[in-house]
Amino acid sequence: MRGPKALSAILERWEPGEVRTDEASAVGAVWAESVGDDVARRTRSGRLRDGVLTVYTAGSTWSHQLTFLAPSIIGELNARCPGAHVKRLRFIVAAGRMKAMLDGLVRTPKGRAAQVEAAAAAVDDASDDAEDVVRRLRRRQQALDRRRQRDGWTRCSSCGNWKPPSDAAQACAVCTSGAQRAADGRIERVLVSAPWLRADDVASHAEDADAESIERVRRRLLARWDEQIYAMRARLRRHALLAADRVLAWSYLMLRSGTQQHLIGRAVVADALGDDWADALCSPRATSEREAPGAPAKKRSKTNARVFTARDTTSRGPIGD
Image (cartoon, rainbow, N blue to C red; front, side, top):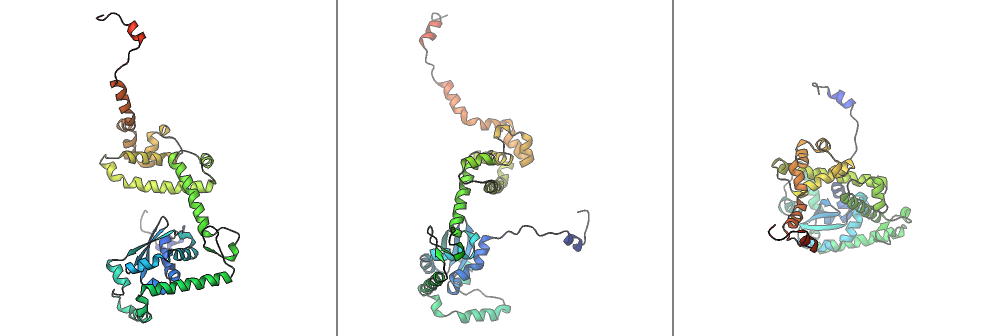
């Protein structure tokens, strides 16, 4: 900016960008609806990573009892939030402030006194009994299943999740997302093994891979490797890069440029990662380190005793010549 600008002038040029939703937050928003108010008061949904949702509970009894209802809870979460792709629940007993909050011991501001009193009035002694709450939740789930069956819902033949009548002839959302993750995994394995391959070559090695899915996996892999390379900056400054760091950096460069390693020059490395990485990967020392794995074999070949053949002995003159 060349100087202060009026806020109205900046807002006139502003355009909304892509809206990115946090799947863990989306799951947290529908958690109470999926498990019921009684369970929601004594549990909290946490981080969602690789399909595993962390659930904080008020005690080990709650974790044990809710384990038996994990399949139905997962089905409810995926039905209410299809983009979450929850595959497993990991129950952890809460500690510290989270534990105090689940036990109702955390003080709240005076402005929320009425809300707290209403919530306290809604909680009775029976709700503290984990087994009783789980029994009520099981009955609630059974009633919901019966209502869905009356409304024409069907269960998926593969995973058993409910499908609405409009999707009766199609695979359920859970199976569809699982198939997509499996296809993406095949594409990712091909790109990790040969990052320089183009989309046509990747499609010939990965089943059911199209240009859109290949590009999606490629961008996701580039973003992940870019974060890992950024995390290596401390070792790069100390000139203490590991062999795995160099392999990852070259893989990133090959995936980004679509070119094999021996065809990537220093200028490409400097343009993509900076001069420090160019010095680390393209200097004579780095070249010798890349050739290091073959050095022991060469050394062994030099130190091995030579076996003389008959031709060798006949070509030599008498001993002493």
